[in-house]
Image (cartoon, rainbow, N blue to C red):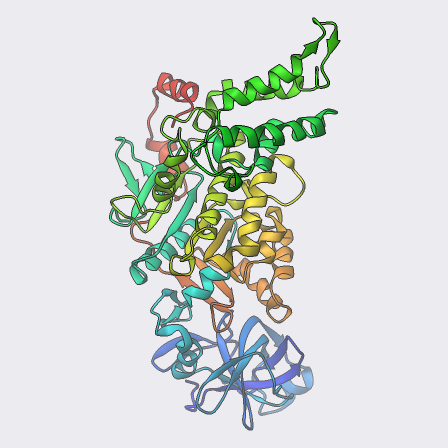
Length: 556
């Protein structure tokens, strides 16, 4: 507390709708001192700390956004009682109100006026802000300024209303994700989480080839994205169009019309045990890709009257045939076009069981490793992963009892904003989850270091943001435009955050909160490369032949 036993540190001098200014007129000593309050040392004016503004029955909770020292005027310095040369000034953002029973209400109804007292928040007042979600026990971290006070979030709102974890490279995103998921499983043992791991940070092989992970072996299942084997016959009509037809081709409309007709016939032909009325062009049932090729080839070469008259589709499918053959011969697409296990419609249930972690032994987290997948193949594969997650619960009559979270690491790499047709399928799958997933118990969490490159539709549907350090002005402005106006000023704090520190905003937290993630145990494989150490003491030679062999085999 302050030297006179009071929590009073200043007065309110300016009041705005989303910003206020407090002047430390009544603090003793020079500058912003470190004081003791409830046994904890607290630096007055520290960014992200909470203050209480009191005026009569009004108690407004505010957060410190910025602090500075103003030099006092010469007139003040000549006054005997004004021995200090400087006074502290703080910029505050109002967050909500506390009633006399210390119940917190977000938003401001009763605004204080200039002259109101500004107090340090006591422990019981700060704890009252977070007591709403404390009963659920989902602790993500603690307040840097008050380490004894933990941050609890509402997991139903955090995952059900979608989540964006944003921060530049090196800010601690992977640590935050690992900690978030580890604690989710510890708190909710029946969790169902699918993690898209683009760089092998959560499951990886050490130097001896032994598998390491950021999760205990009892809670996760590892799947190589290629070995998951999502076959071509699961693709919808529109996805097959994206994969096989060049929309700029002058015959594209003819190719699409013929594909629609042939696809329906082949799906029904290969599944005669099912009622034809139940099979559409998008049904996830097996059909022969070879027969599809030959249907197009025959139509493309059809002639009548002993070869004198060309058929109506003669030469219309040249580009299509070249493209499908090129895809089929590309070994990188073998997981899609040459399935080894998923060769019948009946294998769909085994794929789904594997995908959501229900295959014995059951696991709460399914890590889908994308690191061995070539970059230009990832959009096709990630589109299927997103669609599988949505379709599973869309067709699940008990979806409300089986909520699923799809966690997308480095989401900007395959869910970009803009009109790039290469990513159209993935964008469509993820945006569908963002817009409709909440109704069917499918939550989406996107992790990105470049938020302004990520689909604006996906980010606009996120009800929660965990923002780590962001210094890029474009990214800061993009985040500022996404959050409510009352919280937009908090984005200024992001550039000052330390590693593993974050600002939590949204529906799952009672008020915007600066917090420090708990250290994950075990940590992910995301630490910076030690250039100094390796360049001084590291190996002087490598098995380049093995590197070349891995590159040729496209296997890490």
